[in-house]
Length: 135
Image 1 (spheres, rainbow, N blue to C red):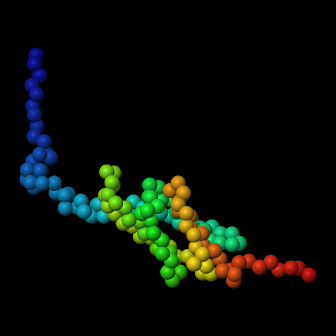
Image 2 (image 1 turned 180 degrees about the horizontal axis):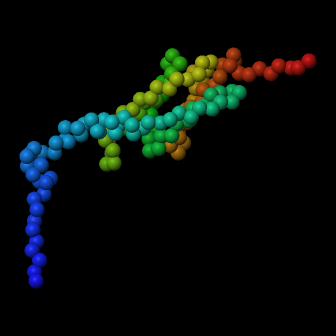
Image 3 (image 1 turned 120 degrees about the vertical axis):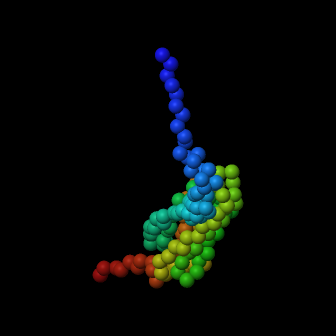
């Protein structure tokens, strides 16, 4: 006995022919913008010693040439500008990081090693701990 094969209409074909295009196509720029804005969301890890405050951010895959840092009125602004590659689109990202009071901004340093950005913000003399001798 032979089985009868019945072909049912594909509901997606009917949907596409009704609308004439992908109905979600209009949302593509919004999705790309959201993806670009969160692709470098980096949490800041703070620690300090007697001499300086340190901030560490994980930025895997971000080349040093794409980064810029600016210090202004108690904030450090981290900017990342990336050119398009085969794996990603062009995009930019800015993160404003509030820094503690009492730092020597002109002596601040930054290093990028193995995708980890470390900011070193030396403390001013007023912020450094002072030892008090017990008589």
